[in-house]
Image (cartoon, rainbow, N blue to C red):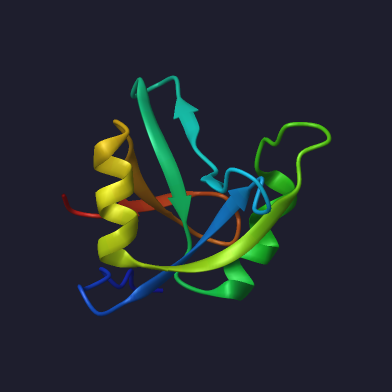
Length: 98
């Protein structure tokens, strides 16, 4: 399967925790690359397939949301994160260009 690089007009799916109160993107840390990242998915189905594999905080509510690429990129950069494109199996397949 070819990896499609999201363009400015595209939307990605990300998990948000605390959607009723603080609404933060789910961010993770990769120890190998020592990098904080937001896992993003090109389809709702891939995100749902991977959800149980993602580390989550117990008792926290998570919601899948479509987010515009530009909004996601700005939020990630403002908080020291990169956006990692992830497949339905939880494998990082690329990164969103800055």
